[in-house]
Amino acid sequence: MEHRWQIAISAGLLAALWAGVADVFQLVTWVGFLSCSTFFAQTETGLKGMLMAMSTNLSGVFWGWLIISGSGFFISPIVGYAFTGVATAAMCLQASYQKLAFIPGAFIGCCITFALGADLAAILPPLLLGAMLGYSMSLLTNQLISITPKIQGLFTAAPANDA
Image (spheres, rainbow, N blue to C red):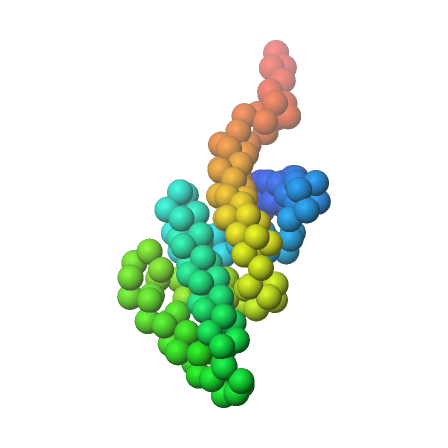
C-alpha cells in the first residue's frame, strides 16, 4: 500500500472527529463506522461510491425493518423465518439494479436494523453520516497524497556546491 501514511492520518483524524460528533449528538458510533466501511468495501469511488454505500445500506435497513415488522403480525416464529428467507433473496436479487449492486451493503444495513430493533431514529442519521465519513476520508487522503511531494521537498537538502 503505497500511501499508507496518508490513509492512516486521514482515517485517524476523521475517525476521532466522528467519535466526538457521535458522542455530542448521541448517535450510535458503530453504525457510522459500518457505513464508512461499506464505502470503502464496494468498488465505486467518490460521490458515486458514497451514494452506493448509502443506497445499499438503506435497502438493508428496509428489508430488516420489513422482517421485524412483518414477523410481529404472526404468532408463529416460522413466519419470521420465511420473511427472513424472502428478504435475503430480495437483497441478493436487487443487486441486478446498478445502484444496489453491492450485496454486503444491504446485509450490513439489515444487521444494523436487527441489532437496534428497527429503531429508525437511531439507525438513519449515523448510517448516512458514516457514508459521508468514508467519502471525506477518501477526499482528505487524496489531498494529503497531492501535498506529500511538496512537504518532502521541504526536508530534502539541496546538494552543497563545493568549489
